[in-house]
Image (cartoon, rainbow, N blue to C red; front, side, top):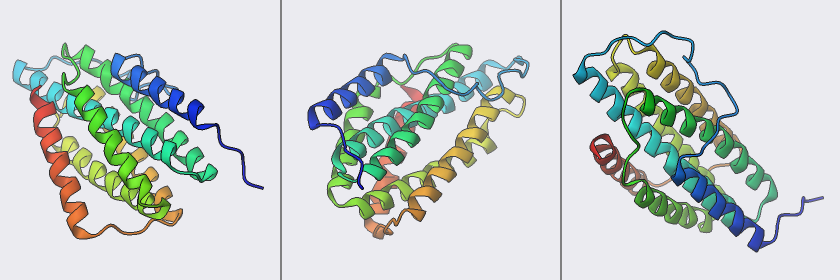
Length: 213
């Protein structure tokens, strides 16, 4: 027997609440921040700026993830997929909280363009969901694959002694890989190359701006 899904009004309220919590910086983590016990090391000003830029990119990526999962859950009628998206969004909220806290520790701030990133990602998530559940799952797979790839690049680029940032990124990468694998197992369709290329181009613009602004 299929589980009942909340009325549309309730789902809209949940979506608005998630947007407000995401953009107001009140995300809370259910898991302890990785690397929290590691000693804070003295970074050079250049290293600190670079680490902050990378963590700001990761924080913005998690803002986008909240928007995407919120839109995807809102538009799918499949109760089991709603549950999957809710579970993934909960873990992504951990990432949002961790990266936000790390930015504070580095004496920096989230991207000032986060409202724009959230709105754009919500629209993209709705478009993917309206294309059908299997296409929607394929979008999740490709998104997580690209995120895992850029997190690997961050592991190579972060200051070697910045154990706190590195631990956060490493756990995020493991979680993203699992989210992608779960979506694949749920029946994701592979996306056409032009769509995958457009997704990468949009992500490159976001990363370039979020690193600086």
